[in-house]
Length: 77
Image (cartoon, rainbow, N blue to C red):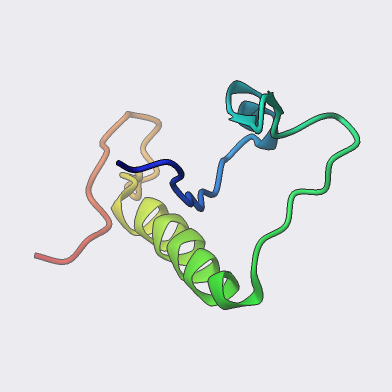
């Protein structure tokens, strides 16, 4: 039978870790550190950069300057 499971997770809001218990106590308190291993940093940076670049590249814009909402995609077809 399985007795223990090792879980690694990155939460957008570290306080969400309060929902989990570790040996019967909350895994996170206001005084807790929220460590991220050095091996995870490049992946986190890549995810953040890709999501930010995608938002800018796909957000429509009005480039006609005629005071009308003529939105066009910024991506090339």
